[in-house]
Length: 369
Image (cartoon, rainbow, N blue to C red):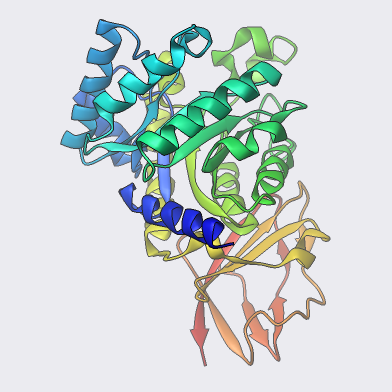
């Protein structure tokens, strides 16, 4: 028991390497230029990532440039640790160890990105060994692992400190028909293991991946709208054990030549960053499990903010919720761009006038009477 408590304490302490308590990152901030890093930071992110290969002289130079540029712009790096099949080479573990030793003390290093969507029993054994090495070499640097919804994804849960889950549900469906619940259901399954979870929400158009999206109506493939982006962000918080979000992906916006999407969504992204910065212990949110039975996510964060998310593509009415959210009578003040709908707590009962719209996220600040 003491050993488990000590390990948990070490992990909590290791979270201090983050630039902010709640991670907000972008995948594939490439190429590494001041302009791209300035754009990423202007979107309110704390961390950047790129699929760089450390196992060549040129690759190490690229990673050094990434870390130095991130430091210059006040950002942290989710360090892409394994690339180009190095993990399966006879001396692969020692090559990875050498890279860890070279970069582990860089001030811009946020945490290790262990692997991208592993699958199969061989990879379970390989990542078990790499994870053990990382805990030996850098016990205070967290290790994140990205998992897809493969049959065996649960086999990899023990071999990381932070779970990351990717599901990108917006294809060619008109709003609100995209099955956003596929994203949140996967995050919910991960959160059940009690480890910190960094969700990977969609920030791209599937036209970037024609081989994958060939079965969809190409002309109708689209980016997530602001309601869907809010859903991705706030549902992750409301599910619990949330350590952040890492949007996928920066480069996909560039390769379709749609920098205007950054401009369009910047105010929303900054608002979400502002909210995250207010939170002290988002991973300890009080999650109301009974809300899920009605296709909602709901949580109380820091005993100060109430988050309610409609997990359904139709509008719903909130009725007869009687669990003690906050004892007594409490007013609820809409936060940020939350729609001004009357909400309050009276006699411990949450009351919301009217309907909550499809996939809508509502955030309130608790106002004591």
